[in-house]
Each structure stands twice: as structure tokens, then as C-alpha cells.
Length: 328
Length: 145
Image: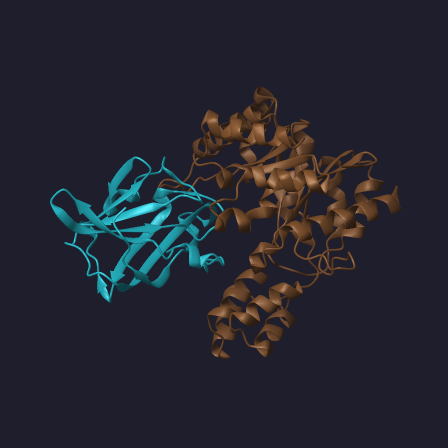
């Protein structure tokens, strides 16, 4: 699926709920859906789909490749992790980081992926990371993910390091979850169904950016009578569902060093609008930058347990296509 | 510092309705097995288990009566934390074999406390994100596998 020089792909992570809950649902089913949606490029998360990780068996890789080929799909990127907390009681060292990067690069190479999406790499290992990427012929992108924002000091420092090192093997993968402007309605509905009080949810949302820490908010809401549901709400809204004014200026600084984009989303309405993430502004900036590559749609609304990934991904692809055609 | 235990909405799959079975050997029934699955979106190394406690009908099962098995590997609970090269897949089963002499046929209240380290999420040296994989369910003892 291509819109000019920008191609639309799908992260298989989008189908997490069915993969986790249904014994009979596997990668073959995901690729069947991608074919129906007209998507060709995909990202696969090794620690999710493989029985052996960080190094899957040959048979596991072959199964993915055969299933993808059967539905006309092409591996584009590999979702890796730096599981440096694997050894109980061990304080991780650079050796742990290099081991996991190498294992994921090997698997990305075996799959034929152009990119490895890696976890955080310490600054002092970035030059070595570029060399490892060169050795394996797979470029490495470090994801910029909520609750981080592109303008954050550590992200901007990473950008400077990329510029200093000057290797095209290193780059960013901005995740659109960084740009959530307001909580998604299904998130609110799920928290209410868990037993959260509406007035306390409103209080948490209204005071998210009042300067209090997550722990201070937890203590405050607990004192106001909040329980487990409100505790979960605070953890989410200070974590992966953090929200606020979209940092578009910061986003634009990352564009020259972006390998591809995680077009993360939580809910697209029947009218093909995303009320949480300003995807139109993000895509307009991407197109204006001259970017040629892949927008990887990644649905994470399974956090709300609605088993609607196929419908949501279809809507999201339509939404992106419409925006791209208007800015072409 | 975020140390909140993350709990995803897949709790019902941790202890499935057919998870509890008698452990029958040639000498007869010697205990029971309990199949445990992850409440998470990805697999984790077995060593991520920081706390695993099992109670049946309100009685705590002593750790020394339990052997945990994943695929062909078998470990006492005390050594699970050392199994850092064993990946517990998100679709995989950790089978707990409890050598307690067996359970009466019929329903049993099973309470599992399962806390796991989020091995890729370190907030400070030695401080990791945590996953609450616990579940409680009334399970009917099935036929031996």
C-alpha cells in the first residue's frame, strides 16, 4: 500500500489481544488480515511471537517467512528489546546491552528486515551500536515513546550524538503515542467499568500537568477515596497513555534522523477521525520533510480489551491514506 | 519513580477452567498439576518471576512441594529465579506439579500470587517495573492428562 513515496505498513503488535487470548490465532491469521487490508510491509515483535527469545529457532523464523510470503507480505522491521534485567539481582552492564542488540540483529537479519527497533541504548555504546548495525546490514532505530516527548533533554542529546557520529545506521522511530492530546474515550470507559469514580478520573485528568509527581497523585487520589481502578488510571496517564499538548516543534527536529514511524493509535471513529492524536499534523510534517519510507500503523487499543483490531487498523489505514492524498 | 504493578486485561487466561488436574503416577495419585499462563503481551524469561505463591482452598502450598516445568525443563521454585535463558512464551504454559498427595474431586478455590519483573524497564539501579500476573479462580479438578 503506497501513497506516493510513503508506504503504509502494519505492526503485527496491533493484533495482540487475539494472539494472547486465542490458542488458534497465530501469524498466519495476521498476514491474512494484512492481505485483505492491502498492506504489505510489517513489523514483528520477537518476544511476542516466538517461543524462543532472544534467539528463535530456525523453524520459527521459517514459519513467519512462509506465512508472510503466502499473503504477499514483506518483513520490514523487527521489534527488539534490551532485556537487561534478565538475571535476578544483577546490575546490567554494557555487555548485557550488546548481547541483546546482537541477538536481535541476528534475528532481524534472518527475517530479512531492514530495521531493528531497539530499546534504549546508553550513549557511550552508540558508536559500537552503529558498527554492529553495519556488521549485520540492519539499521537500528531507537523508539521515542510516551511518556517521553521529542523535546525532552535526553532525546535532544541523543539527536546531537547521532549528528556527531554521522552514521546512517542509527536513527529514531518516533511513536505517535508521544502526541496523545487527550485520553481516548475507550480508556475512560474501561476505567469506569473497572469501578473508577467519574469525579476522580476528571480530577486526575484535570491535574495531570499541575506539577505533581505520579506518586504524589497516587497519594492524593488515595486520600480522596480512590482504589485500584483509580491507581491504574494514574499509572496509565503518567505512563504509556500520558497526554498533553502535542510537541510538534520537537517532532520536526527528529525528522531528518527518523528511519520510519510508529503510527500508534488507540481509537479511530466511524467518521475516520482520531480524537486523541493529531495524525493530520504529524503526517503533514512528515510529507513536508521529504520523507520516503514507511508509516507503520500500530493499534494499542487492545489495552481496552475490545477485540476490534481488524476494524480499527482498516480505519486507520483509510485515515492515513486520506491525509496523505490531501498533502501530496 | 513508577513502581506500580502493571496488570493487563488478560487475567482470565492465567488460570483457565481446565488448568487443574490430578498428578497420577504408576503408584496412584500423588498430587496435582496447575497450568499457569502469563497476563502480559509478550513472553518473559522465567527468571523474571520475583514471587510465586499458591494457595488451594485457603491453604498455602509449601514451595518445597512444587516443581515448575516449562517445555522439557524442570525446576524447584527456589531455582526459577536462576533460569534466565528460559523464555516463557506468551502463549506458553508453566506447569506447577504439586506433590501433596492429591486433591478431592470437585471444585477448589485456587489463589495464585505471581509477580514478575519487567526485565526491559529499569527505573533506577535495581529498581524495575513490575507485572502483576496474579489470578484467583474456582477450578474443578479435571481428569488426569
